[in-house]
Length: 344
Image (cartoon, rainbow, N blue to C red; front, side, top):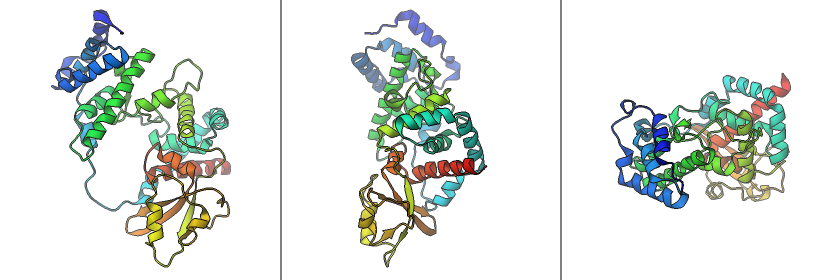
């Protein structure tokens, strides 16, 4: 069992903000937090006294809790409006500069993991505009708040368990890397660094791509590039496979039973082009007839829905964020930057 002892606990306390800077919530007094600390001691040999010292100064983040509440019912989803937020001049210019600066690293990542540079560039651009907006929440504050006081929603229990696991991973990263647990900052949900990895993803998929002996997704763009490529490769990315092709409904009605069935298959590619031809087709001659696709619907508010055919690589991106809008914005931003780079 790791026993930091009184000196280590005092050192941990000395690095934390003064009590006057915290709110009135005392996590170290919560029975659920004590049970979590005891479990960490049993599983990982971390002294509960050390964890009590940490949780004594961990802040309750009400804004993180509120941001987890479901959005109120409003306007219908609009892909074109969503796309305009991410495929825009500022990100394109920043993406070009990023690609130029790290072209050798991106080429190395593509060679090692099979993930094209434009996908890596698109993803990091969508996530943080190449490190410009990585989040200012202390990760331990956000994760502790959500692990033990997630807002009342139908999925509250499952979400609290998820954030407890992420809190566990953050504390293990702190232990393994000998980094102050309060040094990690990120989003209100606990995502960290240029690629916004959750702590469990850092432990499982982050790589030391710059070879300096440590992994740092907040300051090393090179580590971020390698880690994104490794993550996608581990989640089904296949080298030299296309991502997506625009499609058109060919049936007599827009909402055929076949279309609805194809949209209910989940985040996976299950159809050959020949199996979709009765109600959906693509005009792209580049779409291979021998690979499998999933049908992607992108709602456009009151306008007509866009349809795309996504390959296994499209659905690998959805493992990063389970949203068609997200995956398509990564694909589109990367594609536009690649075209801009070729044409300048």
